[in-house]
Image (cartoon, rainbow, N blue to C red; front, side, top):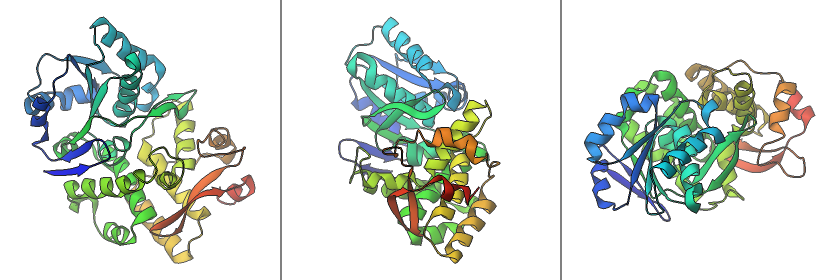
Length: 336
């Protein structure tokens, strides 16, 4: 078991961590799940946590359900069950469950505690770390949200055995991003490894450590934390576009395409660009690229933009990046 201490909470990695739930003394506990975690993860969670007398709240899985309507479902159950401010919400699931559950908990009665128990690789290495919470609005990714850290994060790599490879790859895109923006040595390690050869507990620990170092410099996303947005300006626009068309696309698939495109905008040499292209195309199932004019309405809503200027995080070389890079439409046209 490994423990990573953050500023006001801890992240525990390992299959024995859930016994620590006995340390908590809350008036009421609810566990937020979707149909997938209900089927594949809830029994294991109950067995390991020995949690009793809790309420389950089930919402549909998928990014298209990360909205205010399903927050209302959560709030209705908490209210009907008379949850008070000394209550706890446990978010058992992937990024959608963590983002929306944390947001709903932070708003209910002006805030109750929540704990993340991520069950996807994406939520283990990225979504459950750093205190960003939110929901989608008008098909715009994470348009409504806030910053609040969980009480704790408990990561059991055993849950990864419940996932199809497509979901593993979606989370792996964020692992690759962490290496590209901050650790060229780790990038060189990853590009010579088959995904089937990886020790996931080591990968999770490394990914969290890289993200933690960035987040703690800038917890409210005002400066250096923007490094984590490499691949996400176009990636989120791509995800929002497909969401508006009711076409299923996973976050990591959109980010893989976003990283491909934003690498072309970056100030890196030809060899590095080819290296990135080769690895991303051979590792991920890259979705079909939408047309630029279809992405621009979503791109113009990106949270990094200022004074109607599109601002990107771009690579300076593999392992380093630069934030707040202005990119105009003519420059974008050159890569589409």
